[in-house]
Length: 362
Ligand SMILES: Nc1ncnc2c1ncn2[C@@H]1O[C@H](COP(=O)(O)OP(=O)(O)OP(=O)(O)O)[C@@H](O)[C@H]1O
Image 1 (cartoon, rainbow, N blue to C red):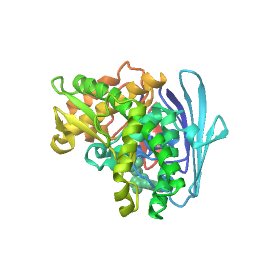
Image 2 (image 1 turned 135 degrees about the horizontal axis):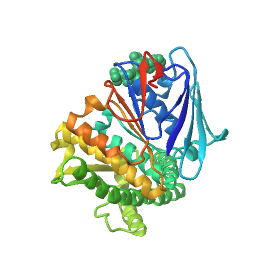
Image 3 (image 1 turned 45 degrees about the vertical axis):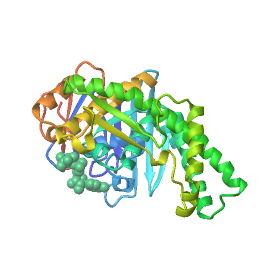
């Protein structure tokens, strides 16, 4: 996929402008605090309706404004499309080729993968960070995952309500419990398969890019033991057993204690949990390898190459690792957006940002 053009209206500190991009490399450079990250954040927002650095999307609207519009046109394998988000006072509207579209059908049309310093949280943060991250990534490759997750969350809410109101002996509870097991098991199965595939790619990338002698694994820490070879039916059966086992405790606590909303993912470098034992540099390299593995996953599942965004490359990596990363993208046909305080010597479009003003070099 190649983002050809981006049009901004009231996005953070950036001026309202239409920008054309290079199909391969786009370097966004300038001093600190000028709006470099904001520009790639706008690309991310256009693709996902979210920000990679805040949950409060309202922060994206320029100070003193109430409405933000981002618009982009891109080319993918099959066709060219235009997409847009009109964000007005907390309400987001999504458009594909000028037609209003539901979020669930919008997300995944333009695939982006971002690599930002805060991504280190995927390793050091708590399980909810990893769940959020992998939920999003699996959704990008499988639209059905997102749909299942949305259904599952609604069911979970009702199940919690029924437990809290002590209505767990009623027929309604049993109906919801079955739905909970049904949708939850589908999520577990899709997570298991995703982890199996990405773990292999992750290891290959880490060895190729950073250390040929290391062994990197991603493990799925499910509440169901020995999940690796289980079928959907076996997962459901185990899941049901767990809900029965925990039922009394759930009634005492007043909420659900089992299910995919409680799971985790573990990175293991040379057999040791990276969260506890890996160095800062190793953690960053693990995350970068993970992001590259996601590109491979998207190609495998959707036959599309995503747009890749890298924030603050110079401060994040030393010279050797930085060059290793830049070399990786050469001749790969991946459209890349890189922000840096230095004017890196790479071929492609160079965009200079100064106090929100977006200036092209040519
Ligand atoms: N909603 C907003 N409206 C206007 N300006 C904003 C908004 N949100 C943030 N800013 C300002 O935008 C400026 C640029 O931020 P940004 O993070 O994009 O800079 P940057 O060039 O990536 O900086 P650095 O190199 O330090 O990471 C900051 O000074 C910030 O205060």
